[in-house]
Image (cartoon, rainbow, N blue to C red; front, side):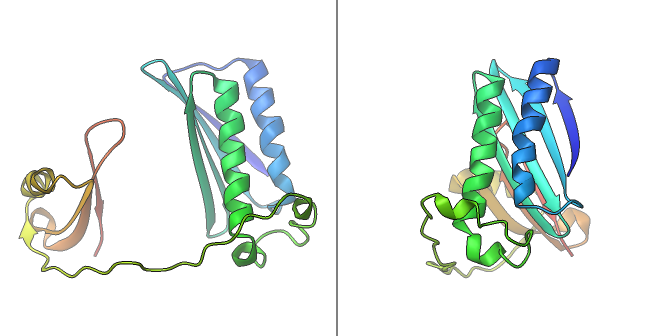
Length: 173
């Protein structure tokens, strides 16, 4: 597994770097050697955040953990990744390393929830500017808003509120 470590608005010690790499290496039993991981360390308002993204081909597994201690954040992110993998074990068996779940069988298996659409909603998609979409989303008190972006030739877009403040825009054709 290839490692990439990113430091945003913080510097990490060699001890933390070695600790994080040792912990991420435990995920090798699930992923093949051509996989890569990106560990992003950041600090915002005194909170220590670790984001871990593991990629193997088209499969991407991501976890983020925020605590007051970077070591605890690393542990939390690793635990979340392992929990996601165990939870979706049967769906992932064909994509991950052969025999990846033999050691994990000793753990209590979490019940796998079926993918189920529990609500459908239909509405007319209006063409509007991004500023109008932000206003509409705030008036509806939603976390995201789907619309046709009149600023970019009428392509579909999703506007969302970011956890760090501000807004994000996802555009499609």
